[in-house]
Length: 392
Image 1 (spheres, helix red, strand yellow):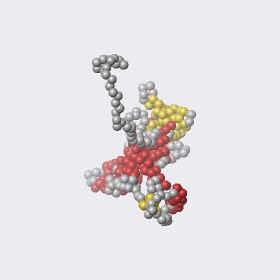
Image 2 (cartoon, helix red, strand yellow; image 1 turned 60 degrees about the vertical axis):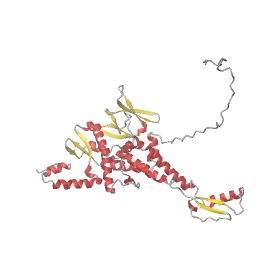
Image 3 (cartoon, helix red, strand yellow; image 1 turned 135 degrees about the vertical axis):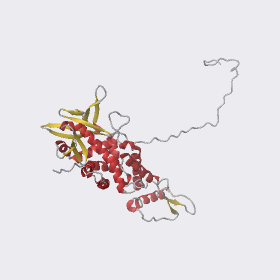
Image 4 (cartoon, rainbow, N blue to C red; image 1 turned 90 degrees about the vertical axis):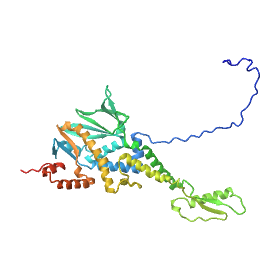
């Protein structure tokens, strides 16, 4: 066979072959399932669709930030506790607009919704200092020639300004971030891990709202079956439709008896078990959101969770596994950043004895120490964080 077209006539193709049409070939239809649409993964979208529109996210974030910001701070110089110090005063009143608890509440909120929190210190002269929080979506981390973070660029509108990371003359900045496995400079927010659950929960709420507004599915059917047969005329159909919409639709007309004329019969219709699955799907999505934030679902009022024996146990796990680790890492970061500006050997920590949710553990510890006859009183006091008695 020759490779160039048209092929030359030879012994193999000199006889014209009859043309044949393949029969039975019709239209081929391809069905592709639509791709799901998910919320964008930026700070603005997560804050709007999550914290501002989803009750589970809103309550989980509020529960964490309000609980963590209420834990009091302690300052140690070496092993001695400092009751009065300029660093404690700064954390108690970071700036003119915010008290200490409000400041920390916003800081923790930025960490949960963005994975990043940016704190800027401004020196006003005469030893006066202020701490301010920068909104995460307006901040960009700048690196030096070797790729290490060196400064923060804050942009609001068309105005940009830079602040050096660490301490510098006139102030400085601190960047707190949660662990991100694929990014060297920015943190990973917990809400992004629960993004699918967030969209499912919001979609279930919108579906339920549409169901209540316009029935989103027929609550019943009017069947016209006269003995002599036939159909409704166009005029009769429109009149019946108008009467149903004006007299029997809406929440204020629920339960009103329906007056039927001859030949009309009402057939009630309801949701199938498959249609009712959205309720369980909504609860399951709520549990996934709570799991991402580290909040026991029992504390958020989500039904179907029997992991904890009682509310007190769930509350204790919430403090131990979520609140205290968050407060501890924040205290260490602030100590490493602020302590050199106020003096050597300073260390910030939290006062666990003031945490009401851990009072049961504290009482059990005191009972065990009281029964430990092999320890002296000073050793027992040291075990619970108190200084020895002054016997002079």
